[in-house]
Amino acid sequence: MESLGEKAPSDSGATARRLRKAKRIVIKIGSALLTDAESGALRAEWLRALIDDVAELRQGGAQVVLVSSGAIALGRGILGLRGKALRLEESQAAAAAGQVHLAHAYQAALGAQNLPCAQILLTLEDTEQRRRYLNARNTFNTLLKLGAVPVVNENDTVATSEIRYGDNDRLAARVAQMISADCMVLLSDIDGLYTADPGLDPAARHFAEIAGITPEIEAMAGGSGSSVGTGGMITKLAAAKIATGAGCAMAIANGRIQHPLRALREGARCTWFLAHGSPAAARKQWIAGVLEPAGRLDLDAGAVAALLAGKSLLPAGVRTVTGEFSRGDAVILLAPDGVEVGRGLCAYSAGDARQIAGHKSGEIERLLGYRGRTEMIHRDDLVLTGGGRQA
Image (tube, rainbow, N blue to C red; front, side, top):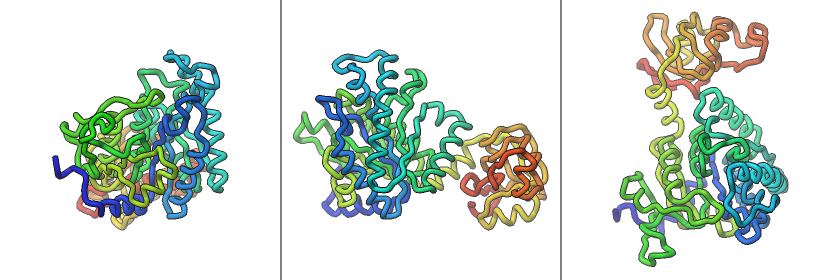
C-alpha cells in the first residue's frame, strides 16, 4: 500500500499541471460548502471566490461545468423546514424553492465575470435512457461551444428514491462521462483520501495518487461527515470508478478554503485518481465493443475513403439502410465489398436515415421536414473496426 501513499513535495507540480492541462473540467460543489451550517444561507463570498477561479480556468482555455448541490439546503430555510428530517415530498418542495435562489446566485456570480450561465436539471433516467442521454449530451456540447458555464443539479423536484442518483458525486461523474471531460474535481471538506478518518486518527496517512480502486482502498471509506450532504467517501470512490473508467482523472480537494481551484492549480494537497486512457479512447472502445449494433449502413467507396481520412459519415455516402433502430443506436458500417469498416451511433432513426441516404446534407430539411444534423454519424461517435486507423 505504500506505493499509493503520500509522495514527495514535487507532487504539487503534478497537481498543478493536471488542472492546467485539462480542457474540459467538471467541478462538483457540495451543500456543506455552499451553504452555512447554522443558518442555511448561501455563502455568497465563497461562491464569488469560486467563480473567480472558474474565470481563471476559462481564461486558460478550459471549458467548465459546475455540478452544484445546495437547492434543498437553501429551500429548507426558505420554507421553514430546518431542524427536522424531511419526507420525500418535503425534500422535493425544498428543492423547488431553493433551486430558484441557487440559479440566481450562480447567474449573478458568473455574470460578474461576463460568463453566460445555463441551468441543467438531470434525473437518473437522463443518463440511462439512450435518447435522453444524447439530448443532454448535445445540449452540454452546444452550451460549451457557445461559451456558457452549465450549472447542473439533480432534478430533486421530480426524482423519486427509485430513480435518483442520491448524491451529486456520482451525478458529476456521469456528467463527466457524458461530455467526455478529461478532469473532474470534487470539492469537499477534506483534502483527499486517508487511510482512516484524520479527525479521529492522527496517524492517518494521506494518498496523493491512486492508480486503481482496490477493495483495500474501498475499505477506507466512511459515511457522510455533513448534516446537509448526502455523500461521503464511499460515494466519492464510486464517482472515481465511473470517471476514471471514462478516461477522466478525478481529484478530491479541500473546498472550505477561499479560491479552492486556484489553490489546486498552485499545487495544493489533494488525492488524484488516475484516468484509464483518454475520454476519446474510452468512448471509442465503448462504441466498438460494448454496444450491440441495431442496424447496418452500406457505404459507397467515397464514404469509406472519407472515414479512413478521419472524417464524419455524411448521408450522401450511404447506399442502403438495413434494420430498425432509433436515433443514437449503434450501427455497423459496411464497405462496398461487404467488409465491416466501422461502427457508430447514428444521428437518425432507421426511417429517417432511409429517406436521406444518398442525398446531400443540404437536402435534409426538405426531405424530413426538419433541420437535422449534417452528419449521419459524427466522427466523435464513430470507430473504425475493419483494419483502418481509428477515426
